[in-house]
Image (tube, rainbow, N blue to C red; front, side, top):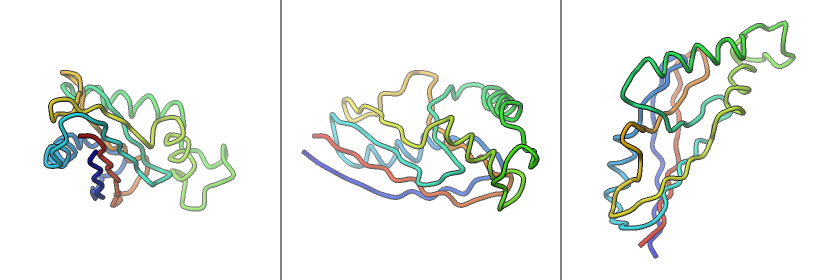
Length: 139
């Protein structure tokens, strides 16, 4: 059984849903694991991870638009706004989405669907540098 772990760093734009599939795939394929699991974890409270359609950029725009309506940036709605009007809404969006993903690996490849990609979703209204911890286990 092989275990490998790394930390990848990504710079994000405000409220960006950034596709990171290629970087994750490149690292995972270099590990030489034929069968196993890849775990991705983002140790942040105002960003999240998604597996989502990667063919149409409209999907990302619609997701962001929906969440903007679902979780408005209005300081009158929240007590916690230490870092501005996007602070608590970013935490709520992160709570409603995912901070960890698990993807099976078969024949040395991530088993994503034809139209699936891996995305880092920045929920803040400013650019950030985000860390992502990847852990691969398998043989």
